[in-house]
Amino acid sequence: MALTVKTPSTDEQWQAYYQLRWEVLRKPFHRPPGSEKDEYDQVAEHRMLVGDNDELIGVGRLHFNSTEEAQIRFMVVHPSFQGEGHGVTLLHDLELLARKQGATRMIIRSRDTTLGFYLKCGYEIKEEANTVDKPMAEHQLVKPLDPVNHIVYRPSWCAELQKVWHNEIPVSKAMAINIFQYTGRSIELTAPLARNINVHGTMFAGSIYTLATLCGWGLIQLQQRERDIQGSIVLAEGSIQYLQPIIQEPRATVAMKDVSGDFAALNNGKNAHLSLEVQVLDGEKLAAVFNGRYVVLAKRD
Image 1 (cartoon, rainbow, N blue to C red):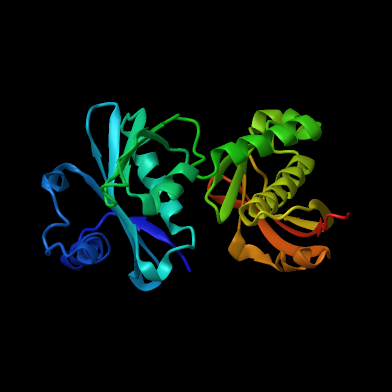
Image 2 (tube, helix red, strand yellow):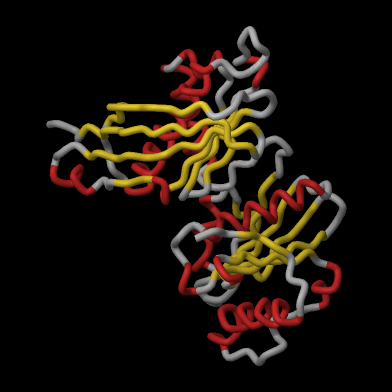
């Protein structure tokens, strides 16, 4: 399913936008229609995540409390699409929007039911609510916005993985490979052209292959942690098609939808076999396609 984040513009889109707010955030608590709106709507930025045929998946709103502080409110994913990583996609877009407009920190208010999600996205509790006496009370969370850090999910895991690469795979440090983004369902790595350039002024083919290999490796490793599964990852087979030279902005990306196979064998003490396709891009232009077959070696007693 192709996903797009857009600003509601038509009457139909605005109606669907507010209807989803009310159905998920207000109706279950017997709040009347209209309670899903407030005075900040007129000065806020509104976003909706849509799929194929403009099917509404989620909505969210961004407004500024000051020139440095932005706040996200009314963020919700349709119940039919929850648990698929769409909340991270929407949150990422709103955080990027806040950064572009000069915000240095983000504020979110969260009930207990969504607290775990925001903590995984790098937010910290600033003011803890008394949910014992008031179960529907909201905690206030804050996250500093680093202009060059776009990791919005499991930032500590990504930092640990990148440190392992740089310490144990020296070429990754020499290439300055960094985890740019992890959403829980996809990963994106970057590497500066200046550190990976060949005699023709383009990205060295070996660097492209290494970037793609680690991209697939990284997604598998983080998905293992999501599932609390142990096992060493090895590349069993890899092939790459170089489609055009990379002359400006190298990056590699892969999502779980591009992975075949699963981790189930590890639960029975057997190796897991996974195949995936990594796209290597120059900015937005597809430059290479890597197909890799990885084996996750079961932990032995």
